[in-house]
Structures are given as structure tokens and as C-alpha cells.
Image (tube, rainbow, N blue to C red; front, top):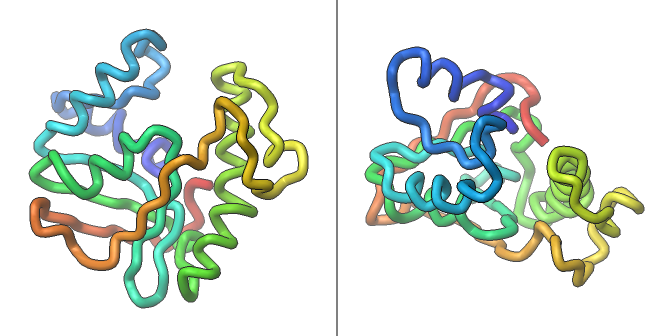
Length: 163
């Protein structure tokens, strides 16, 4: 959502770059997994993040792992872009933010975009550790230091962006 909000995909396409973004409205649903896999072998992987702690830990929760996988392995370079609303004090606050802000809002957005079932977190506005088939909180990662196999850059934008 952060990358959408800042218009990076349109800008890159306008400059002639190939963009493998599986959630582009122009990508048919049956091709999205294939596009997500292509992104994992791109020269540069762009992503947002759910939370970044004051001591530099990058915390994410994903449904399928394509985003967190691309952040840490595969591409030559990973660029993570976040708004100031993603900065939290510590891991406890990161998980609080993810469970009570990012996950329910993201589940609501996905339901509206894709017509998925109404998840319990959307109903109550916070994570209830559900077992729904379309649960979006399946994989949790904490990047504590830059991975050895990838060049990683974090860009913090001085405004609230994304979920």
C-alpha cells in the first residue's frame, strides 16, 4: 500500500522499467502467483513493511511469504519503504500495531478488492488468531540485521503511508 500511495510502480513503468507487481489491477488473478515468483528473481525488490522498531528490527506478517521472501533472499537488492506511522518502540509494540491496525485493515482491503470471506479480524477490528482459510497472518518475520545474501536499503518517508 505504501508503494502504491507514493506512485512508485507507475513512475518506474513510465521510465521504461519492467515491474513484476502481482497485485496490479491489469494482472489477471490466475497469473498473480507467476508474477510474484518473477519478482523474487528481480534485480531490485521493492516492498513496504508492517513495522520498524526504534532499534532497527523490521517486522512483517504475510499470507503467502512472497513479500518477506523477496525482502531477504533472491533479488540482488531489497528496498523497503515505510511511512513514519510504521515506526514503533519495540517488538511488543510492533506486534500490537500489526494485530490491531495493519492486519485488520489489510484484511478489509483484500476482502473489498478480491471478494474474499469476511475475516474475524475485520469484524472485530483486531486479530483474534483465527483459523480462516483466507487468513492473511500466516508467516511472521523479524529482520534483525541486513541479510548477507542481499543488499538492503530502508527508506523512511516523513509522512503516514500504508496500513
